[in-house]
Length: 435
Image (cartoon, rainbow, N blue to C red; front, side, top):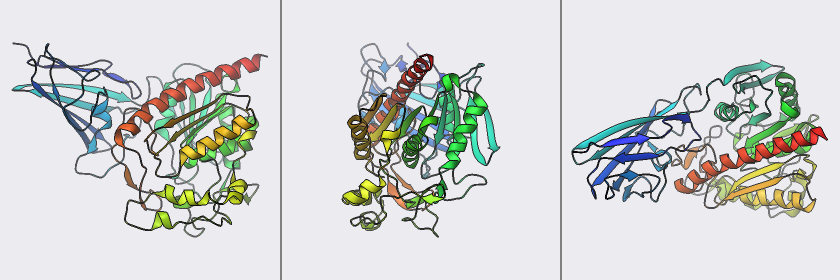
């Protein structure tokens, strides 16, 4: 009698590697139940699905759709992205330190037979090194790839949650980039709020990164998400000579006010960014149509994007606050979502793309716009089920939009798109340096 078994190819690999999961040894036509459990930051996350074994008694998650369970349709990693926290409202996905793997246990049962297997998702490849940075007034973490280098570099900034995006930096380093995750608020020694952040701080970060790692081909890209997506476009336009490429996850085409991450003493309509000590004009400033009412009113969860759209109706305010992306002197990548609940990143990205096309931007411009996805375009192969959250600064309960399946697709496709974009950008930069 055949014995039930689970096989997982590449059982120990980076988090961005899709796994091939197969169950063998079931009776033909028999129901097979599979459960996946992953502890994340002390919280257990779980998904389950029910399949029907084929004529050979096998279930192949890359081939077969479940007949019921946590997800629908054929998706080899569905048992990961469809996980939800057990007896918790946690949204935390990554252990600290990031060198600790996320370990998923698979349990299969069919009739009286059972089987178990595990696979690990690593955020840092073997040999990747981590260094805390607390110098020159900078607060961040530097991750370096294995090997002597030199390596092209990326500076990573977070969005309105603040802090240091170490998981993103570790994964960049695992794929060959010297990665500097730079905090600018809500981190040790920094303000707890985004208000009145000087852009010169990031220029100092760019200079420190170049000086410290001496990157290959002098290539330093910027990568940021949400408010960080706004920021990297702004930095690329402001310090154009120092920025080799820009990657904007769900970015803005405009300078925005402090919003949910503001200092309460400054207010959400107060300035976010300073240059030469002066606040940059933002879209809410002297805006005749902007209103918070669509966000503030009604029951939770709130949808921030509705308020953001009111500001777009004042053409003069829009023109005053537009980020001059035509000043960027390198390739630009935009990643957006059509059901973004935080702000209309799809509309914003189209504006940026159209402006760059209008001025015949001489560098590569890529735009990936994910249908039905929401604001939280993060990592490949992590849970996407937690759409509602309390903002980490304001505490306002909001929805990022999208749905678990389309958000999972955006997570996976965006990262592969970014890696391809950066590889082209590095090659183009290296070629230009030789001429």
